[in-house]
Image 1 (spheres, rainbow, N blue to C red):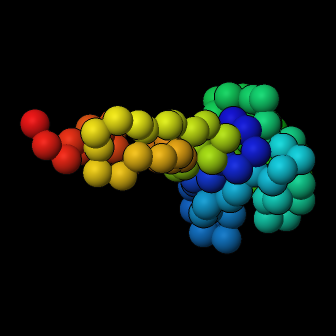
Image 2: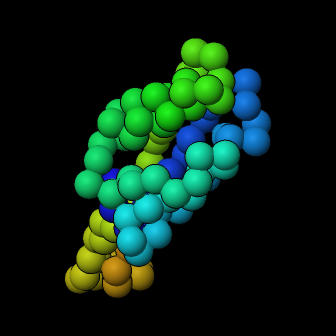
Length: 106
């Protein structure tokens, strides 16, 4: 996880704590009720554990938290050559490499 990444956080049964959260340039993410927590330089599993511990500390009983990266703003791909749209792109969960490499001609 790094600055600019968009995290999809699901807290089971807690719609106000579920959603997309962007990691700021300082590596922090603002999370409802908890406030800012450090997200950069951690894995999604480590962040899940951190959120679970923080929420279990007097906020929720046995919280179930899932964290995935919806968009890697911190990770860029550069597409060059004979493609429709050369340039720099952020990695997204729903974007395949083939979609970025659509050739103009064969």
